[in-house]
Length: 251
Ligand SMILES: NC(=O)c1ccc[n+]([C@@H]2O[C@H](COP(=O)([O-])OP(=O)(O)OC[C@H]3O[C@@H](n4cnc5c(N)ncnc54)[C@H](O)[C@@H]3O)[C@@H](O)[C@H]2O)c1
Image (cartoon, rainbow, N blue to C red; front, side):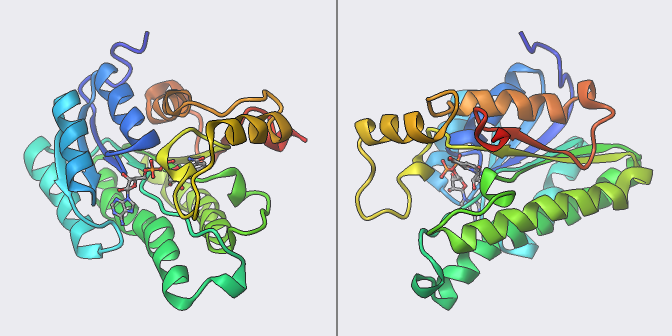
């Protein structure tokens, strides 16, 4: 269905080894993009790269030198970066009292610093060519509060504001910057940071009680929106935070 939507475009997808990042890699390759997957999980990166035929770079997006080097390597190989997707992310499930300095720094360094470092590196290259598209992963928890996920909420609020501010800064450079704000998505992150992973029955109950469409999202349902935002089909969209949440924030 999306054949050719990103034909010939050079894309970098962070967090591409799992969940929505991996679904984005698949959607982009099917749409004709030349994708480089970036993730710190070497085994996962190799698996998705092998499955989709894309290149993988293994490293940590909270390291600015790795981010600069990643963009330099992609430009050296492919001549440019047309699209950057910042999907790498982590969660810590606690209120302030259960969030120590390391927990806070870990979440902020991946979810905020990582998006900043990768985007800063990409816009240098994009601005030279006068075009580019960045899609960030925000969250419903970037727009409304939630209990027991303090650092994560703060980090995603920052991603939403970084998205808007960069959209304004780079509109004259021909660079569009948007974000998706997913709701509850069926990925490994749903179990991450919990003492006991939720049972399938508990997830069904959670969905029925809290989500208007009464089910979790599948990663592909978010990736399709990312693909649209990344493509020229969204040519008049910049600075937008697009909810993909089954109606959660419509209330
Ligand atoms: N799952 C959800 O319900 C949900 C909802 C809203 C937003 N999000 C956001 O969507 C994005 C994707 O989440 P997901 O659910 O697919 O998670 P996931 O855990 O399946 O995948 C996240 C990926 O990011 C990678 N990663 C983590 N830290 C990294 C680092 N420092 N450097 C490089 N790679 C790193 C992980 O190795 C993993 O492959 C995240 O930003 C997340 O916060 C998730």
